[in-house]
Amino acid sequence: MRHHASHGVRVAAGAAVIALTASGCGGGSSDSANGGTVTLTVTTHVDYGYRNLYKEFEKTHPGIKVKEVLVEDLPKKLVTQLAANRGAADVVGVGDDIIGKFKPSHERFLNLADHGVNNTDDPWVQWAYDAGTVEDGKFVMGLRTDIGGLGICYRTDLFKKAGLPTEPEKVAELWPTWDDFTATGEKFSKKVKNASFTANTGDIWVGMGNQHKETFFAESDDSFIADKNTELKQDFLTAANMSVRKVSGGYPPFSPEMANALKTGKAATAVCPAWKLDRTKEASGPDNAGKWSVAAAPEGGNWGGSYLMVPKQTKHPKEAVELARWLTSSKTQKQLFLDEGYLSSHPKVYNDPEVQAKKDPYFSNAPTGKIFAQAADSMEPIYRGTKDSDVASAFMNALLRVEQGKQKPEAAWDQAIEDAKKVAG
Image 1 (tube, helix red, strand yellow):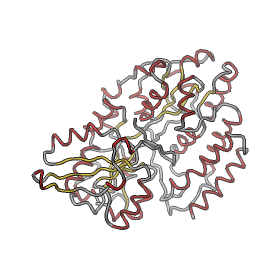
Image 2 (cartoon, one colour):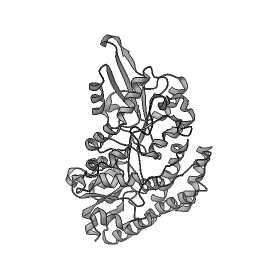
Image 3 (cartoon, one colour):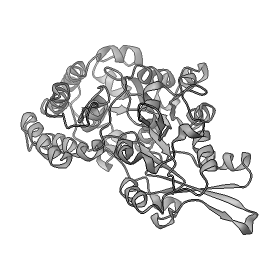
Image 4 (tube, one colour):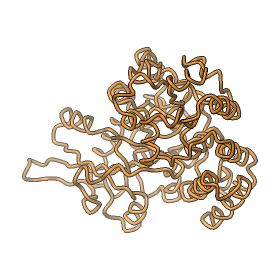
């Protein structure tokens, strides 16, 4: 099971699955009994789907062993490890919404530019590369793993029942904007009474937020601007009104209730970046194969992706950088997409004919490679504030209150702003 998430919506990936604990998060070591084998520890907050890649790296790099550790509250633990200058892994992975938290202390990580990393030799898409840098790009603190792209998973059987088209291109034409998405949902609800049009508003809010250059904080000085960001407020009201207008089912993101809704046909659509397809398959089960498809999301965008960083305290900087660079190279990322479905952050990969041609049988052979690549390619850089992930929950909680009928959209927004200001300082 693999999960990526952003804007505070993160999921436990089950650190116990790997039977390693946070206490085992120390940096790499040399095992003299094994002829000087270097052991590199990689710590992430969720499963990146790298297990087979680690084995391949070990085969092609004799003398290096890789140990994977999943730590659900990694950001909090990493802050402590950096401050103490001990205990951090050799390579650390954090979500694209979390890396901003560590930019003020970037000097505690290796500047990967000093180790030959640039965006020329094997380039990432520029916006994803830039978000992993500081000091006007001179200091490269993180290497981009995957990107999400953005799509909408939808039930073809329920769309037929509602008299809506089912082909991905025609479905995308229904909703060039999120307002059109809501209007389509209202048409759906008139025809189909035993299913909600979409699963929840929280996922939609995250997708919307990733379509702006700034959300909660200003790029110029990292000041809190959500209360002045009229586009952000309009997004919030659009999402919240999906609950008021009975378009959303109110199944909380990443919850058992949402999984059950997807499996039993209680929700006709769900927001789907590339990494979420497997989760949707898993929730829906094999009996629903061919009942789902994927279309482009309103207004494009991206959701998800992470960065690999190398703490300066590592005892094996050369090997750690080599591993991080190998895992995020275009060659490795192409393999990861074809094998596991993670969308590469390298244009040469997501524009590759083999990637563009990929179709998913479970999702009615929808051209998933093409859909997600087009969404990601249209992206502009998003500024992630240093406290982005800290304030995000205030807005998610506000949407939940509207879905539960406890507040109206305007009042929920006002409270979210007040709650966020307390965290933002």
